[in-house]
Length: 373
Image 1 (cartoon, rainbow, N blue to C red):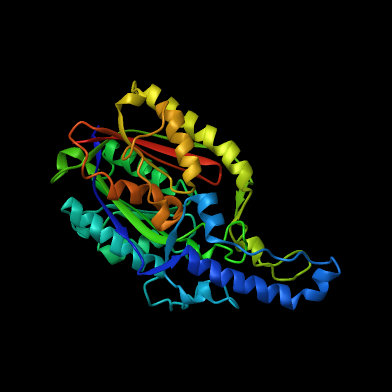
Image 2 (spheres, rainbow, N blue to C red):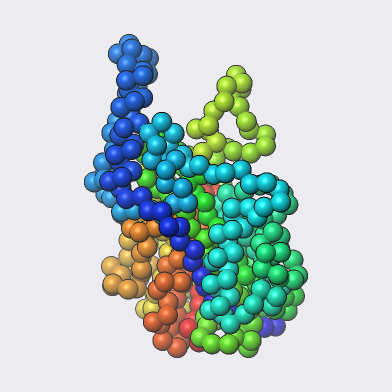
């Protein structure tokens, strides 16, 4: 048996930023157009008028101040309100592969590795560009990696589930070096015209290199333990798929095939589930809350993270113990906890214990206990 370690991480950040003020301006312009076009039906009580959004509402509901996106123009067009993504030919790299490659190269550089030294690629993300061939295999080819690759989808928990799979294979000796990459193009599955969720998501790609600790070329994090759990719920759902193209009456229904969430139920049910999961994982490993130097939590909602941090630590987390990147990146699905880990881990001292945790649709929750070495 071998000891797995995270030896490098990388983040690809798009160049386009949409602030809350910009988003609200476009959304409210769309609302005005919609209400004007449906004025008669609204007056007759047949259609509900849409409400304006505000930057204050967005920040209070989520803690988000801005988000990065691959395409800004399409999202902010009041007559469109979703991104322009050019259809790639079969001979071109996919858009997920393109952004994944950037994150992978940064992670490999941090680990002192090359693509040729990788023998497993896991593409773990909440939405895949296609059903097959696996995006991971395309990334594998782009990296010049050997071995094998496969896609994994556990919604917002995809990254931690991918880390568990890779760490287990390194531990058993079936592979030597893996890369888990999370190209999250969440702007493509968000309904930007829905006031309750139009502000939630942003685009990004993250990657971590996982290999035998004995092979590490520099500072690294030993993966002591992983723990995953799932429990079915419809409170976060996306019905897009090859069996779901139209409503039963044959009318196209784009809303049904976008991100849908019952936010109040999610908060009420997921927060205690995640808190209990983390505490049980730590107890199983014989570790107490006061041994945690840092928690890198899923970046979905500041209120959720604040509640979880307080429940796990038994007090309000001090500055730096539970870093948030949500205000800058918004919710980036499975990539959020890895962004936080990548940006806020270099300052940790040898022997410091940290915990990576992600959670989301399913419901799903995954946690990884690491130690700076």
